[in-house]
Image (cartoon, rainbow over all chains, first blue to last red; front, side):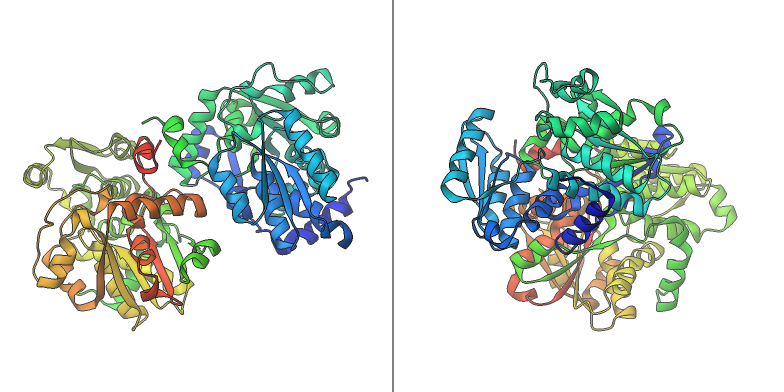
Length: 317
Length: 317
């Protein structure tokens, strides 16, 4: 399939009954501190607490009745798991969610709370895929990949579409990048709904695959994985990299200290709960005030599903 | 002075240019869990991060130019200190803030950040008052008490006025109670702008003075002080008790465990940062679902100024 302006518009209409139009917040003290006009698109207030509902719901709503009757399946330790579980419950079909044993309990509970069937596996990519394949073979459920899927990318593109509707004179938008679903969707949304809108991404130094892939032009692995931004540990796919290469201006790396400082600032000044993954783009802008000075910069705050017992680690005790 | 419908209306117009009209949030999952229709008035998003700006700003704006030129003064370890510091900065006069040595550094920094002069004292009531009296004698600054002051109470009354404007068919409103400024202001606002609106308060068992005073009819001290709700450790005054006795339906006690559970629920489900003090009314409703079932219940979320290093203690590590 091809993702077009019309197909993103259609996806938006398709998912609108099931999602929130999330608010765009601004903060005077952060703007004064940086000289940047920030517009925070608060997907932490989204259904299931993250933007992932957009792509997951769009993919499920495009299934035909026979496909839908057999259920949906995915592997995810994070918000895509919740999105698929929510979609399954909402559309009255079974959702099979393969999760690594190491998943935070709060996320496992949330998925089960939506009535999904959780299948635990060893915490590695091979185990995830093998377990998923067995489920799909046994049930005939449709696999919806967290990001390597055009329907998912099309759904994620609706987020920047809403942001542009609320802030028509936006200069720049920055998203986090993990597997690249949100980033590639944002690229296409920006391209179709506000040509000229620059797209940047923020990535943790401790999961720096996208920046390498962006430079070399082929999918690379991160040199090492060590970050509190647990939603950004995944690797780009050929599909997401192709879109990112064409549309992204730059990918900016941030350190763990910069992520924690950004997290602290958002909690203290904005009084909202966000995930470490989702402050990475803000941290990227915050460390580059000259690059963004005087610009209207949209930040997609991608989610707010936190394990509260991690607060001590993030903020000190 | 007498606080009247007209005087509260005038106070609201007076402070409007300096405050935010804070949003009223709802949350489906919390409503489903309890069978109560909650309306959360989010004063955590207010200027200075708390409702206290309403009363502090109202009191300062009512000073004449000669009074104002000599500065304003108060003793407070909490949000009233920030409110007075902000008012001083905004109105171009000096604010003298007496704070106990034990004040959280984040609150001292915030007060200094507004350009106020902070005077440290021993952490007891006598030291606070003596230090304050010296400052007032030396400077001629006007003392604005955190709650035992009609202009402050009048300003706090504007919060429930806004809530009623947004949710005209509200049945009940619940506030926290410390010194009783917010509670007595809420009583008067409810009485004048929606007669019949029931007013409840929530109070920690570990600072249970108001519930005793409410029963005996005279100002009582708490049997002991031990609570994470650090904004509610103060004692009613004759002034606030008189209003509370006349208008409040009941004051409900909550335990520390109930406060922590309520705090966790608000962070996890609503994705907003609030102070322990401000979830006390929600905890009071949450433990009494039968009393409030099917009712439209307004909760004044009074503030969001937290010391992030306390998260480990509140949420576990």
